[in-house]
Amino acid sequence: MRPLTLWSRLLAGLALSSAALLPAQAAVLKVVGWNDLGMHCMDSDYSVFSILPPFNTLHAQVIDTTNNKLVTSGVTVSFEALADLGGSRNTYSVGKTNFWDYAKPLYGADLPPGIGLTGLGTAGVTPQAMSWQATPAMWEAVGIPITPVDDTFKKNTYPMTKVVVRDSTGTEVAHARVVLPVSDEMTCVACHASGSQDAAKPARGWVYDPRGPEKDYRRNILARHDDQHLGTAKYKKALLAAGYSKKGLLDSADGGHPILCAACHASNALPGTGQVGISAMTSATHTLHASVINPNTGLKLGDDKDRGACYMCHPGAETKCLRGVMGNATGPDGLPSIQCQSCHSTMAKVGSPKRVGWLQQPTCQACHYDGKRDLMAVNAKGQVKTPADTRFATNANVPAPGFNLYRFSKGHGGLQCEACHGSTHAEYTSSHDGDNQVSIDTQGHVGTLSECSACHSNLRTTANGGPHGLHTIGQAWVGGHGNAAERDRQACAYCHGADFRGSPLAKTAAVRDFNADGKKKHYEAGTQVTCYDCHNGPGGNLARKAQRAEATRLVTAAH
Image 1: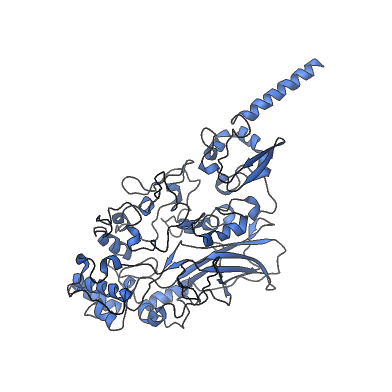
Image 2: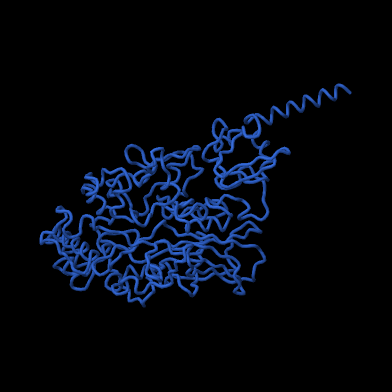
């Protein structure tokens, strides 16, 4: 598929619209915002070939805390640049990347400087409107061409943006501080830099490009690609269909027409790309490199068991793409408890031709089921587990039939899962402070949005009406929890443990002080709440009721 067709499809599928304005609302509003991925990737150089353009995504939902519902009209939502916690600000992209010099030959788009493939500019001084999308019930800005370089030309892969909600008079009524993560750390330099691995050396020899390592390793890759395929009828056909030189990819790039990898190898990150009969991008790269020797360990990349193998190419070593609460979990030995392979399996599995890249991913319920928190989403055969328990499950068939992705799922009150739990790979609590600002601003402390009062001005006591069947959080629940436990004790066991002595699901998210039967109980953040904290286990209330009843009977009999 020609790049121009790709760009046209992106524009048609992501056309911006605005919500109809209604009179200003008197309700108290809050807005939560998030990036759909823990990290968006772009190329550090576009003169030789491109895997991904600068193309970031921002989502937001507005909550009417007075009437307990999502706001779907009567407001406008926009985004703009904001200085991060360290004072770094990123308000423009021109001059920080050579993308606009090569956007037309790569993506078929004759773009004005600073404008991305969907017509948006980067998050700047002037607010830009976010588009209302009715089906997922959220505002979004898709295709923001932000770069990982701030206005002082320092590298910052976590630029901060401000999402602003305004009423029909243009008055700001709510805002959120949201990181728009972006990295150009994708690299193949470890094996493809001139003079590195002999196994990757082109037949014509290393190019030793004097213009620097970014162009050097890229040209070596194209030369090596030509070595393997040039001369075959299939390759000639693909070159012609993509509009590249019949002499090969390197000749085309050196002649001023850089290569879009997805022009031949389909990528679901770039809808409408690829050619029939040619392997998809994720399959081609992962399958080929699974047998490559990692120069750091001496093992095949596909045999490595930790994220270091993935970080050879994917952002991570510097960017820290995997920085959420799961990625930061450590075992007694101090090493990460969850690796990339724990969720995605081996490189060969990731590259399987049967797998649909970007869409066929592990689900939440593969690890979160039956009150457990497993550390492996895949079984011994590398297949994603499918437990029967769906309390923490992703929505079925989103974004398409047969695919169940966390970043497209929603739950309590129509809120997107990422609105409460954070972006994929950067789930709350993230190791980067900027990621956590949304949760801190919304509920007063870091972590998954779990405080009922954050979104509900008027709390309702419920035993199972909260997210994932949770009861009301806070003092309001203390007086009624005993009756709920007596009705269905096993419902309590799901989170508080089979022995009712606590579990990770029963940890307090913040410091809490409760008043129970005239006695005060203090919990530090992270304390597991048990049935033995205030009385003798789950039957403690029943025993006390029996004692009181017997005492009342005796007093009555005495009179």
